[in-house]
Image (cartoon, rainbow, N blue to C red; front, side, top):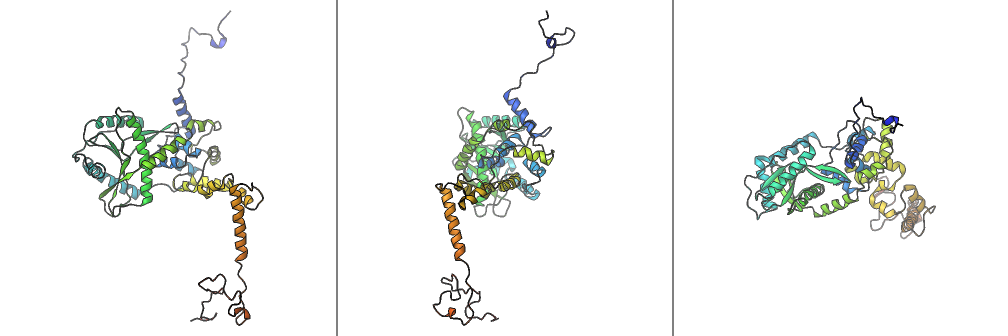
Length: 433
């Protein structure tokens, strides 16, 4: 009796088949993310600007998944028929690169001088700082080379400039590779993030909105740099103040300012911790879901709508898919399309029809504070509309125009006494004077 089934019978004339090694969890996740991204499509790197925007809206599973997968959201938005207007003009891009090259010229002498002046005046003045070579193959190789350069520079007791180092930060279970403009190692071994921007610094101050965006972006770099520092013994200190370098006034000369990013760092760390892991979101998707921009628009819409989104008006300045999500949110009547603050005040009322029904007394719990406030507001509005109907203007010479007669030619005049007819006092209706 043959103890082997026919399908498993060994063939002496054939070389036994090689069983492929089992896939690890990381390998399986990378394969799944590649299938979601589309065949032969390279992942788009998640930069610090996108990561700061992602941390500002941690409840949006759609952005967390697409950024974790590496989908180019600008191309995806174009394929969906809702292209975004993101991006920097070629002129601004060239001007920014020229300014950064000037700041880092001569081995970063001017940049190190600014760091010494603004952040560490008690240290020895920087001379010719060391600029290690950080080139390597792939982002993983560059990340490892950066970590090694930081370890070596920490114990030298001299100024060291790392030009465009590569850092890694875990985001929802997927690594994000980040590239700050520069990292400076102080003689005492401390580390400082340097952010170079092309917007001007006029009379020592810059646009607060742009400075805030730069601070949130730099906070992401600080978090990633702290991950590297935690692997050293003893761990060097990562400064919570970063150096922001901008053009001075209307020239191309650099000016710098120290920006404290402790608040932004704490908020970003907390928001990143709230993000749902990418594999958990991907596991809930239908079989065969793909976000390749080359697919028909109908298939892409189905794939995108399979991932829950949390739209808010702030997304218009931070996400390439904002126009698509806004159209869907408005079509569904979601109150989030009107703003997060309004959504928070409405409680369990999540759609505009629900809000209107509650205000008109057709739905909603009267004990609910939101419902009670809506009905009170609707009542006040109705009373205001009934009370602002303009009275008929009496004809000239009628008794109604006598002094003290009610409605004597004015409505809500107050202290200004503006006639209802719109004719200024002292003029006749047909006067051209």
